Each structure stands twice: as structure tokens, then as C-alpha cells.
Length: 178
Image 1 (tube, rainbow, N blue to C red):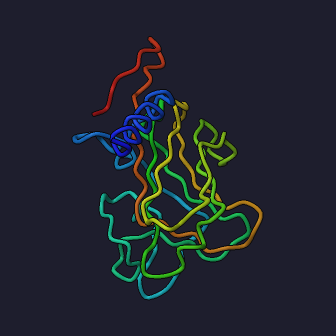
Image 2 (cartoon, rainbow, N blue to C red):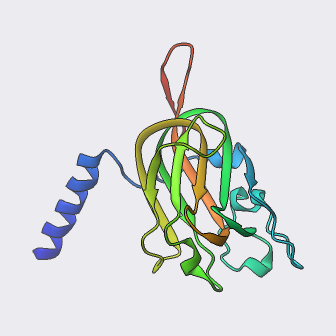
Image 3 (cartoon, rainbow, N blue to C red):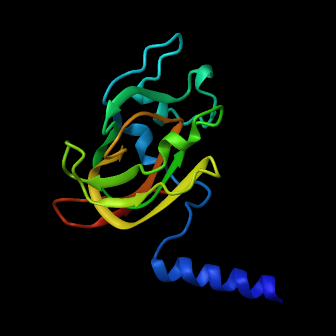
């Protein structure tokens, strides 16, 4: 009975916050975007920004599926979406073969400013799981960025998923992308 009550309360909390995990068939709108980052870490495997939106969630950097920026002060990674969206969920997949703690303190931002100075959807406070979900509750923007403010660090992401509804700027209608 306690398990059922806990699940019911958890479900109610998700509903009350207006956020639920993307369902089966949901479209990851980041896949059609254009990714960039502060720099490309140059090792024998290149950590290009586009690797984080390739749809592959392999968490071993050396297999070539993750983005990886060289060490920088306030490093950033971003995706410019093909249109303006009302963002419901963002899911980051962290590197799993080492260095997961580097992502602690990273901010996930959503907005229309290309300079990464957008409102914060959430912060990475725990890296005990490689999958880091964020509920953005309908934040509107064409840019989604991950920034580690206040320190010099490497920034690596193995996948960034973005889910939401297209905002038709002419009619202000929302079009569901599922």
C-alpha cells in the first residue's frame, strides 16, 4: 500500500508541476538543430558539439559519440533549434567512462539569446545517474545551452534531448512535436 501511495503522490507532483517525461514516440527536437561549443577538445577522438545531438546515448567518450570542449573559464555547449519552441523537458546524458563530476554546477538555459545568457531551466546538482532530466515548464526559446559558470572546466555531453511544442510566431499557436 505504501508503494502505491508513493507512486500516486509522485504522479500527482509531476502533474501539478506540469511536467512529465517524454512519452514513447516523442520527437527530440534537438536532432534538427545546429550545435556549437566553446572549443573542440583535440585528442585522437574529436569531441565535436554535434556529437551530443546525434541520437546515440553511448556514454564512452573514446567511442566518438560525445561532445567534449577543452578546458575553459565558464565553458558552454548550445544547440540552436530550427524554430522557437515551448520547451517541456530537456534530458542530458553525461559521460560515463570517467569524470562525471565535471558536470556538477552546470546550468541548463533556454531562451532566444544566442550568447547563452538565457533564463535557467535547471542546475546539475547530482551525477549519480548518467541521465539527467530537467523540467522546463514551457520556457520559450530557440536556444538551449549548458554552461558551467564560475570555474574553468572541461565540458562534455554524450547526448542532449529537447522536447516541446513549436510556437507559431504568426498565430502564437503551439504545435505538439510528438
